[in-house]
Every structure is written in C-alpha cells, then in structure tokens.
Amino acid sequence: MIMQPGTKIQTLREEKKISIEELAQAVHLDVEQLQKIESEAVAPSLGVLIKVARALGVRLGTFLDDQLNTGAVISRKGDEQASVSMSNVEASKHDKLAFFSLARQKSDRHMEPFLVEITPGKPTNPLASTHE
Image (cartoon, rainbow, N blue to C red; front, side, top):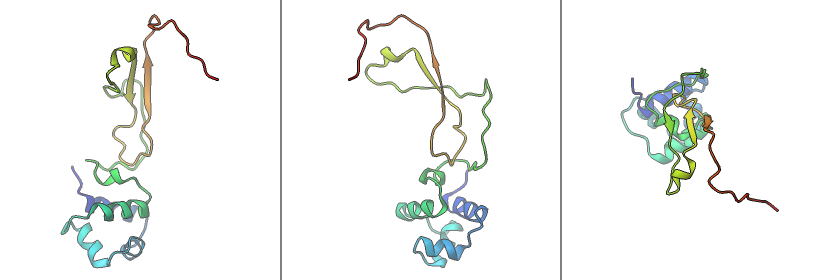
C-alpha cells in the first residue's frame, strides 16, 4: 500500500509520541494546517516537508518513499537485490565490481549499505599509483 506524505507524517509523529500541537509549533505551522496535511486535505510544500523531516528526525525521502518501513532490516545471503550500476563513460574499467543493495526496502535510512562483489582479473594498468 502506498502511503501519502500526510499519512506518513501522522504515523511517524504518533510513533515518536509527539502531539500535533508540538509538531506544529516546531515547524511554525498552525495546528489546523498540519491537521489538513495529515488528513491529505492539502498537499504540503517542499519547505514544510523539510521542516517536518527535521522535527521528526527523519530524512526528507521518508515522505516520498513508496512504503514506510521504520523497523530494522535483516539482510541474509541470497536476499540481495540486483546489482546497482555505478557506471560512467569509463564503465568498462569497473566491470569487476558489482554493488548489491542490502537495505533497499528501508525507507528511513541515512546511509545506503552495499555488498561489493569484486571479481578477480588481470590488471589493466600496470602502472601503480602513489600518494605523497
């Protein structure tokens, strides 16, 4: 089920045991306006979503993700998602690296954990790099 931003705001607010009055005060909105947002009567502006995200301690994308999943995510071998491409014009140089998302279904993440699979191969550039 896809949750709308207002419904997500209400769900997160209730999970964190924050009253609608406290949240309205924290984001400088009238209680009535916040009630309209939570009931999906009006759509919140991006500025309001940013303020609400900060007040609730979540990332902005939490309100835009398709599904709300605030609990822990357990990743097991074989559960990894399809490889993520991080390619550019030099993609052929990096074809020995495959990135697998470990928490794609987690909506309130602040970092993206990946499993990196490195395929052995012969060096394509025999010149080693050095650092000063």
